[in-house]
Length: 129
Image (cartoon, rainbow, N blue to C red; front, top):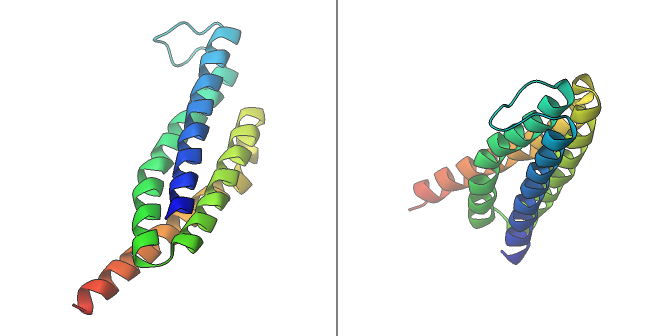
């Protein structure tokens, strides 16, 4: 499980990094708080951070449960793909939202695999008593 915990820790560091990028964009593009719109580039930074939070809601419980029911090593590997996907998503979305596909796929596919494995493993454990 330590590898899974490391991946989760890195995902949280990544999320904080995205938050700092939003703060920097807020200053750079002069979007005063509490506004969340007013400059298209700032809005891209903000959207990456919000989308990452939306993905973390599925990612964190799924990777923990997948590691418990299936494999912590496979879970950590899927989590590493998720982390790379988020970085790709960040840079491509900020540059041009239409180019975000690879980062999106590398985020959603691991999340789907983790969730499917979690459900499979939990059902299997429930049925075996």
